[in-house]
Length: 273
Image (cartoon, rainbow, N blue to C red; front, side):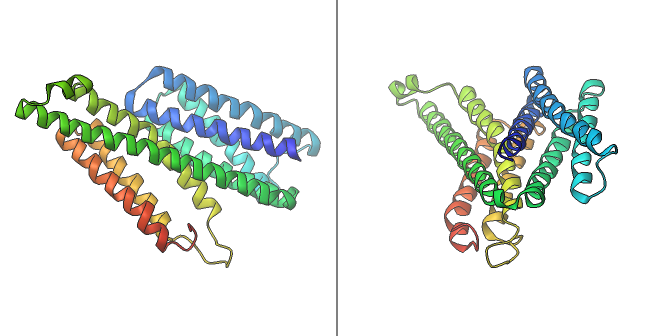
């Protein structure tokens, strides 16, 4: 059971990496990111296909007899269609969203599989997924913080240039355009990490230890709001052609909301304590 659990977790990891690179490809139209995303998704498909064929050979039928078997076949179909769309249609936005949806369904199937096959492994699996949820969130928050600091450096440099003072400091900083670009690139990397964390945390925290539904949990809602306001930032930066002070002001406001979520909403949460 242990090797199978590790394989399931490995597929989740590969699928998650694929989501990250599809997100980067969507924003940058980066062919290298596109290829990396494709090969990680293809890796998931190969492993899934092997398991699917083993089940077909064992039962002499397509595994759709139970809800969990049907869920696995459904994920395999999603991944298959995704690879076909990637190969023939090149729809960047579609690939990102279908990958996110497929990742969510795979998380649900992985947990249900352990409940059915060996429920004794559930605590270990949940702890590992919870650990991944926390690590992804903290890395995303760390990158958002660095982006925020770079935004502050931008405004500092802007003031120094405007006042024609502090030339020694100017030599230590990048140019304004470079600072704004670095701030943007960090958020591009942070957003998919936060999204994956929200997906894992949402699935793991549907109910607390007392059976209370956590859909209205303050920290969960706050994390979604943080994701959405940074998504607005990315939309304004890429589609609205906002640059310079205006877009970095949105960055700063977004980070302040992140701090509210991290410190205030955590204390109000029924689950994140």
